[in-house]
Image 1 (cartoon, helix red, strand yellow):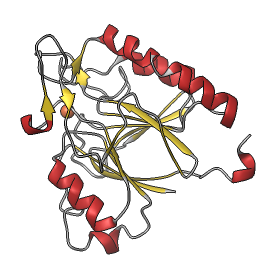
Image 2 (cartoon, rainbow, N blue to C red; image 1 turned 90 degrees about the vertical axis):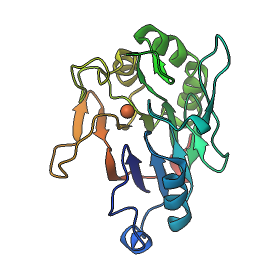
Image 3 (cartoon, rainbow, N blue to C red; image 1 turned 120 degrees about the vertical axis):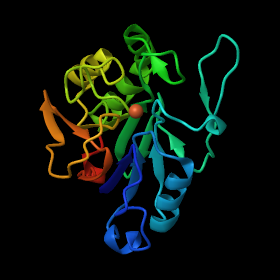
Length: 219
Ligand SMILES: [Fe+2]
């Protein structure tokens, strides 16, 4: 399965009338956040493929609601599938994710390090069921923020989330994809091997190929 991951800014190679020819082999689109709904809509409509997403720390106020004492809640059309603490299976590939970034100024979709640990615990029952049924916990984890010290930056806004390091070591996804840290040089190294997982910075855009499980591999 070929995946087009997009994140952080509008890339002219993607926001183009030639997209459908350039990316004709894409089966699934994943947004790692900090891009507009209009851009997601363009890519999904042009390629006519499903789009999964997490939001980042920058989001149009029209696309979330906030009530007193509560965290922000995403308000994005349901044709786009939110990965935040949800589990999706596409062609046998199991995908989940976590939105936002580390807390740095109190804006929406910012989380303290300990909060991320607690919220990820909610995924454990489903991960264990996956392991029992399919022999694996998860294939792809989608986040906006990178893990701590794995492709992150030392400033308070771009510090990685420590709970992601624990998640990767424990549940061993094949891929952990993220944005947030802008890699403007297309020749920059985007993939970092961390334990059994490829951590990939998808800022701009990045193509990922993942092997779909054969039906007889499903336990
Ligand atoms: Fe960001």
